[in-house]
Length: 446
Image (cartoon, rainbow, N blue to C red; front, side, top):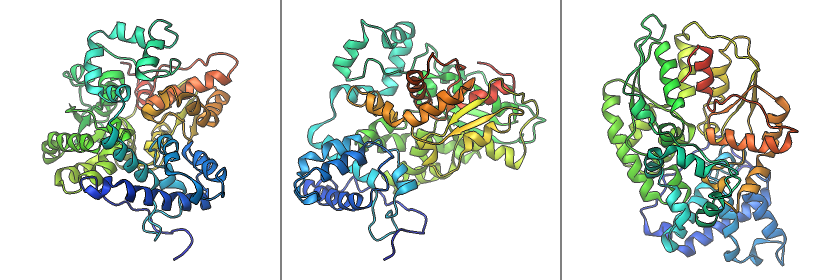
């Protein structure tokens, strides 16, 4: 056995249907095995709060080793993991096929699944994971919902903090009266003279683009149509990432099978599949096939799926983008989201934006600290800002006119962190996702 591993990391299917997966004693044995290896290595000390918590827990114990640490004290370490996969993808020398066979994020996922089965999911968190229901209900009263969830609302945010556990200062996504799917009933005219004319793609809307920022989907369709791509929009349901974070693997499996069944006929007709935000692309490409490995439909969908920035870069490299891109005043700072990095596809958002002429593109490839729903919770918000502080400092220092991230929630979290560091509130454009900036460069607006 060698120190470290030179082979590409691989992952095992998640055996969540096996009774042994939920065996508390077996889980504790595996946690101790992995924690002992991590404590001796420490390469992940600067990635998230899980590892500092783990190392302090062991270092401050009676013996300074894991043998004197109670298993009851493991929970803060488990809860601090955001499932970003950066330790697995970029740091850990002991991931499979190494003999140590270490997959820290999926072990934390197993621990949460065991806890969820034994204790249930807390009310506030459970209700927030129901993104489709929440999006539909809030959409009907969007102005009221956005007023109630606005930072600084002294009437409603303390109540939300008390009932749901959402920190009163955490920036929350807005809702729209008309969803992306509703707005997409009229398709943009396809540019038949574009080099990539002939391509066909079905857009998986994602819950965020559908309910919280339809501009991501609308501008993606405009850019694709400008480049000759015929598009359709399909949205059966949320990908299940919010449920994955809570260890509800059965709900994730249901989502995977339902979405794969809905998108399968489009694949049969020769359509590519595009996900509009990286968390959903990551689920479709990598997590779903490990959760329902027996499903041929899920496996086929994973192989057919591309992130929107990945897809545009593919057009640029193979056929060439349609003419008409114009410079963007003020330059761009783009944050490469962890769930984009975990797809192992390179900095596709930055590659895409570099097609815009005479525009400075600055890249931040470091964790924003947001971590999905984790970073907005009362007990985590300040820690999330601390983890994201180095990236937020870069945002403040660069002072670009446009700040975007492939993860729109990470972008807003970074702006919150940057505002705390800057002397005055940053003046940036409203665009959240890089595809919105490419559309602006073409002259499109929502």
